Amino acid sequence: ATATSTRHIRITNGQQASSGQFPYQARLSMTFKPEVAPHPYSCGGSLISDRWILTAAHCLEDAESALVHLGSIEFNCSRCLICLSSEFVVHENYQTIDGKSRNDVGLVKLPYVLEFNYYVQAIALARTDENFLNQDVVVSGWGKTTDGPLEYSPFLQYVRLNVISNELCVKTYFEEVIIHSTICAIGKDGRSGCQGDSGGPLVASGENPLLVGVVNFGSKHGCAVGFPSVFARVSEFVDWIEDKTGSLNK
Image 1 (cartoon, rainbow, N blue to C red):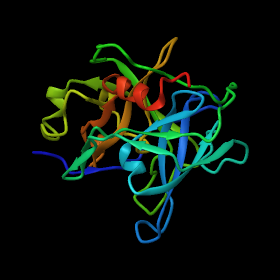
Image 2 (image 1 turned 180 degrees about the vertical axis):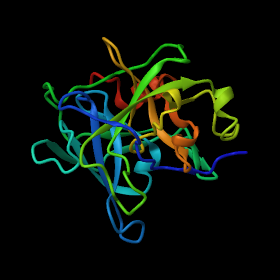
Image 3 (image 1 turned 90 degrees about the vertical axis):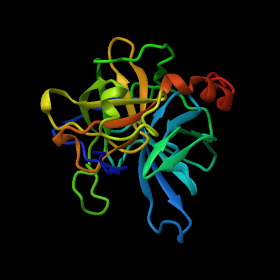
């Protein structure tokens, strides 16, 4: 049986991040024309250079602007870097099938070049053919802490997940969306670990953290009952990213 999906799943049994722990983490407050969405919508993102944020295409679709928050673990940050962008790139082959997505990546161009500090740093992209199978990874986000409207965690949360094979993942979803450019992860040891905000980072942490995934979707039943979350596999999109950004050094 396939699981129905949702774009926002709360991080359950997550831990609160410490200041500076995830300096690449961005929060995007997306605004739309009133007839599309009357209220801003929060997404996650990853700072991948001093000018670009990587996020999910579905966060940017039909959006007019993004208020980008960097350098803080607070949802409503009092001291953080905030800038407004309306320059987006959505993957040309992005599509949704029954509420689930493929090629679900997009870019936000910042209005100026950032200066990095302890709290604001870019993360390197996973570029190898390594599939990260069975590796520990970390997902972070403000997520939805309840099923009520716009009930986000006041502080950045994170949880450790374990990468599973696409063959195992496809048993929960279906073959049209679990493809070579997706990566799936599930809560470790039966713990209820779930994804954070759409578009947020999935990271192989270590001495040199690597961005391996972008939050796409998960089961609406949540990881507490053993369903994996699905991410865009970053290594499959490096060429696209570099083509659109004119290489990450510009």
